Image (cartoon, rainbow, N blue to C red):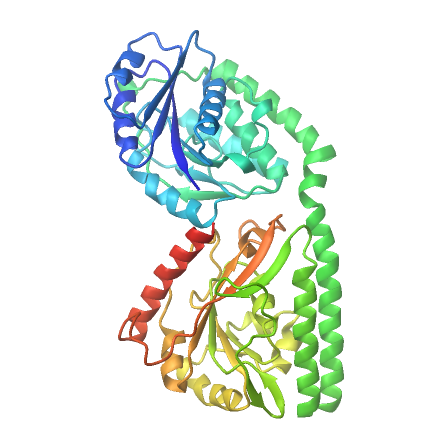
Length: 483
C-alpha cells in the first residue's frame, strides 16, 4: 500500500503553497493546477521538494477534471491510494495521520473526513447543501454518511468506481461515492477539523445556483439508476446471505433440540462437533470470498496440530483465544477453530433469537456480574479440555481499527494458568461490518492464529493492563502489514 496526496488548486495563491508544504510533511504530493491565473502555479513551483509533482494545464476545467488528472498521474507513479484535500485552507493537513491509520487496516475502503455541521463561521448554505446531499446519498445507496461533500478523503484506486463517468465540477465527488457504494466499496467516516474564514476573507468558486442545479440534476438521475441498477447490484449478496444465514440458524436450532432431548455429555459433544462443522461450511460458502485459516503464515491448519487427549478424543490444548472484533462473523469464525469453544461475551449473545439457544446449550457466559464470577465455571470447562474466547475490545469496531483492549483476557490467563492464543481476522469487517449493516464483497476471509502467550511471558509487559495495551499495538501493526 503506497499513498500520495492530490491537491486540486485554482486561484488560491494565498493558501495553496502553505497547504502543499504542510502536506509534504506526511505524503508525497501531486498538485494539480487547474488553469490558475493568479500566480498559484508560480508559488507552487518555488517549493523545493523532490516529492512534489505539479500537473498544470489551461484553461480552468473544474475540480472533477482536476481530480481525474491527479488520479491518472498517481497511477503512472505507481501509487495504490490517493489522499485528496482542498487548497483553500479549509482542511488541516495535520489530520492526515487520522485518516491514514484507518486506511492502513482497511485499505479497500474509501476514507471520508467528516466535518460535522456546527463550526464557527460555517455558511448556512454549506450546512444545507451537506444535509441535502447526505439525505439523497442515503436514499441512493442505503448507507448513512455524515459528510458527503468533504474533499478530504482517501481513495483506493483499485476499488474506485466511476472515474470514467466523473463530471468536471463539484458533483463529481458525490458521483464517485455513489458508484463505489453500489460496487460494495466500503465508505468509512473519520472526524476531522475544519476552518471557515470570516466572510470578508472567504474565497469560494462554488456557484450557488448553477452548481446546486447540477447537483440536483445528478441526484435525480442517480435516484432513478438506484432503482434499476444500484440497489439490485449492491444488495443481492444481502439477500443470498440472509437466506443462507436462516438455514444455518435452523440447523443450529435443530441440533439444540436434539441435544435438549438427551442432555448427556455425549449429546453435548455431538452438538459441538455439528456446530463447528456448520461454521466451517458457512464461512467456506460466503459469497465471492475464499476462506482460509492458518497458523502464523502456514496454510490451512484445521484441526490444529497442537493436541492433547481429552476424554478419549483429540483437541487443542485449552487456551484463551482473543481476536479483533468488528463483525458478527467473528464469533462464527472462532467457533469453527475446533469443537471445544466457550465464548465469554455480552448478554445479547444468549438472548439472540437465531443462535441464543445454541449459545446457552454450549455454556456461553457473560460478565454482567463481574469477571471474578466466571472464573470457577471457566476452570471447570478447561478441566474438560475446552478453550475460552474473549473479545478484548468488548464491542465491535465500526471501521476495523482496533478499539482499546481492556486487561480481562490476560487477567483470566494468569488466574487460570493457561496461555492467550491471539487470532488475527482479516476480511471479516468488509464481509459484514457493524456500520452500516450490510454484506460486502471481500476477496478473502483469513484467520491467522498466532503463537501462544504464556502467563509467565513478560515480553508484552509485566501486568495484564500492559500486556493488553502492547497486544493492541501488535494487532494494529499486523493488520496494517496484512493489508
